[in-house]
Length: 220
Picture 1 (cartoon, rainbow, N blue to C red):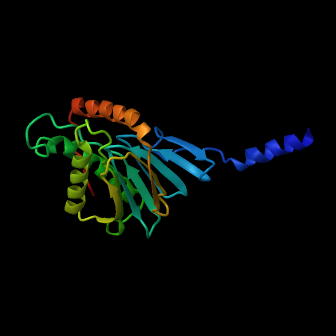
Picture 2 (picture 1 turned 180 degrees about the vertical axis):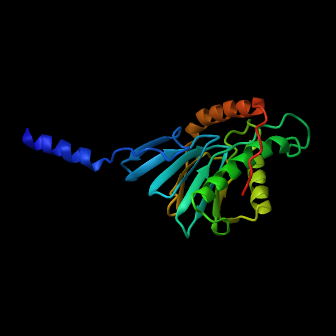
Picture 3 (picture 1 turned 90 degrees about the vertical axis):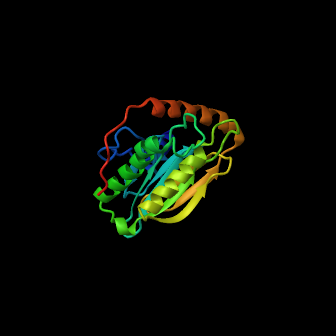
């Protein structure tokens, strides 16, 4: 009996207390992952996170795209997760999406970059890894391809350096990013996960399409 009590005390000590989220990220889910042996932060559509701690940032992508941006000199990194609203008709799908792309895709990128710079990163040292943009169901409009086109144009315009990417295809992905080291892992999800994932993305698309225009975000 005494031995069991001692073992329970030891087990409790091996699981660190969940630390408070950095200011501005209190709404994100943070928890201790015993498999990875570190704190883990879940990033959902429309969210982003920046950190210089030894922790993991995780997300699941269907047609959405995540940019993982890292300053290797200072050990600061962050991830976002965004989707462009679906085009409402017209043969030129890109032209009909540009207005909302500027609202959501650019906002996602600029918020992430701004917070990286506020945390001490230097723009000249930033490296980018891009993930997602899959066409996870054949009957769904190819939002993923438009997301890929947008993020590549943005990266080119802003003259950022892409060091790795895993974009397109037909599979959803789980992405794990370690902001301090800049390492990233990608795992393709089984096809049985697609229906639930796409249903969630369709709901998110409708929310974006009906969302009022937001103020501009300054990039410094």
